[in-house]
Amino acid sequence: MDRLEYPVVVEPLAVDDGGGFAASVPDLPGCMSDGETPEEAISNVQDAIRSWIETARETGRTIPAPSRHLAIA
Image (cartoon, rainbow, N blue to C red; front, side):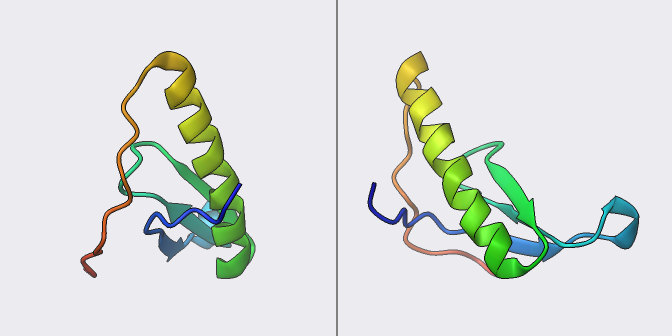
């Protein structure tokens, strides 16, 4: 499958939560992953995106197109 172009938000996790980084996909509710580094979190969330899309297809859910912009908070 080609590289998926959904915007991803990467945030550090608190040490109490195990440390590392969380990656979430605002366009796909509930789609997230984590990793020891930001790069690993992004790589892992690509797998989560594929799984999210596959499940959406299987259940007949609408798959949103990737948004073209991302607001930085």
